[in-house]
Length: 347
Image 1 (spheres, rainbow, N blue to C red):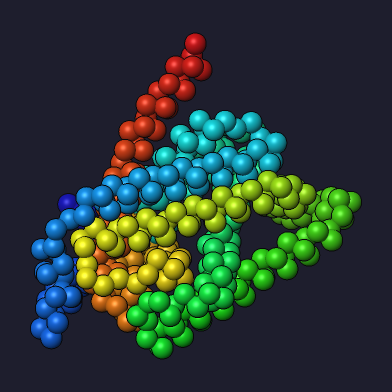
Image 2 (spheres, rainbow, N blue to C red):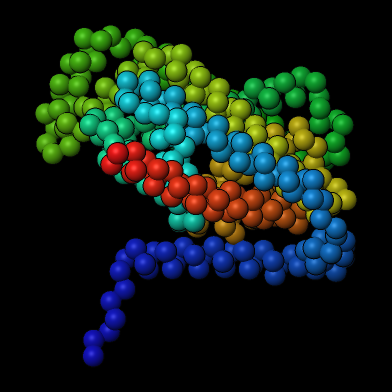
């Protein structure tokens, strides 16, 4: 008998799931009990009473913030003059959320959304471009949230009211500097795109179409990007929605960190600087929704500004559980909406 064949996708899923579970097991093992400070070990934290109000707020804020991201995508699709209803954005957003949550990495859901929307649109390359730009706008919203709020917090010296050590304040300043640089780069790119005239853009698209095999798709992608530059109000609205949604995710994490009533946590203003960095770090971990990696990143961020590693890791775990719950509920809603859409088409 020959050896059983294991497909590459199955092997990839097994490896990434194993990596995620391994990282999570390492976090739990390494921080289960602290001999020098028993009160900051995981074993002690898990014995604290659950703050049910904080847990309810975590789930509610998580759901609302996710819904805002769906509407952001809806705005970007309409900016390309594609027929797309809010119900469709919700339906495809929910299936994308499910796969983003349980597939390796953080872009699996984007692939699913792109595949599904191309079935419903005649301009398929443009439809895919809306998914890609939605991801870019989301990242821009993340850095703009830190830049705008971080600058304000620096002006009022809010970190003086929180017990953050000098090294921790230095880390927060580095985070602010990096986000400000990225924000400036995004503004520069937007300004440069404004110098491209319509005739020049059309000539560029014609040149791109001559590329072998991929020319037509690349040209369509270029036209979509150029059109977005001419739809500044739509892009500005999408960016504003991204900032609001990420602000909601920061509040979500803040509530998640309070669920097990720890004795000491960073202030809410400090969370608005460290949580976006933690979200970015978690996104690049190639495990389902960054499992294990997110706990390491958030635990490290808490620790580096002078708080217990366990508090950050627990906040990440509680937020992860809330996201799983919302994603699973959304999966059932998706199937109800899918059945209703199919019935409407058959009628």
